[in-house]
Length: 362
Image 1 (cartoon, rainbow, N blue to C red):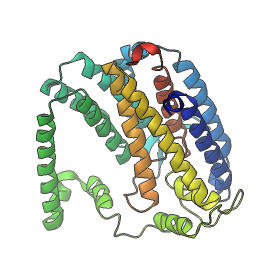
Image 2 (cartoon, rainbow, N blue to C red; image 1 turned 60 degrees about the horizontal axis):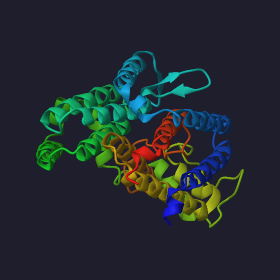
Image 3 (tube, one colour; image 1 turned 90 degrees about the vertical axis):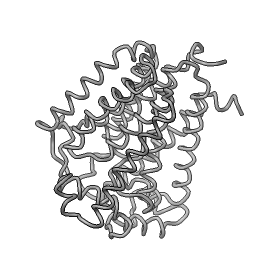
Image 4 (cartoon, rainbow, N blue to C red; image 1 turned 60 degrees about the vertical axis):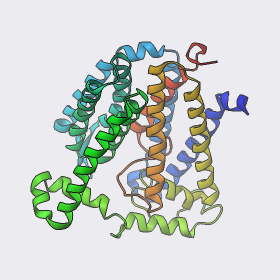
């Protein structure tokens, strides 16, 4: 069993299956809308670029990558600023650079650069209140910029990365109790104002932010055309689905946010179970590698990636099943989207660069 987990095939095979199913779903997406006609070829290009980046990055020493993490972070902040002025607006959010045939989303790059910079910072500073404050400021800067786009989903991942890195730094646990207490105070104040004085709350936090938060709070009580159709597709799907070049029902944002439901409708409950199994195998592989790594800095990078990788799976699948709010988070290596796919391949390249003997306990 140990030899199976240690083999890179444990990562490559489920990843290849996930990518293949993604491409098949992009083929079926053509039947949903002319807007999706080029998704198949673009997704294939994203995968090929990602694989090429993995082959390059895995040859680079992780210490060399982390050495310049501060500059990667600064670059991503500059891009987040520029996109607010020169970005392409889509669905009310100005979060993408239009590069002709493709678009680039700086907030996805920031997931990577923030993890690298915070991990490097945590190993160069004592795990105390100064590190907490410094790390919080570093996380708040891109969070504010992304909030202005707006992109609530990315902010969640930034703070998840921050908490993961501080937890494994390790910061004294009483600081987490203090931060948790402060968070509960603000949350309680928000709930009280939300129930008894919405007008004051709107004046304090602004109309845009209020309605974004309200959308999260009321997601289970309000009808959603996307969610209703997704649940109908899942509930009416057969074991093998409708098959290639056929669809059962239109789902808005099917190639991205609702790819899990779309996949089940296309290729059945079996395909849904296969995707879940592939993610399970990849997650076990990554967690196994984490427990083998001995160097603190490397462990922080790896566990941060694992946390956002698994969390993204939970959020997206939960959205598709109506268990969690719809916040526009794609499924890694499966949903359509060049920025997310390429950034995750870069993460994989970094992880594969860790497989040198010197980083392991044995």
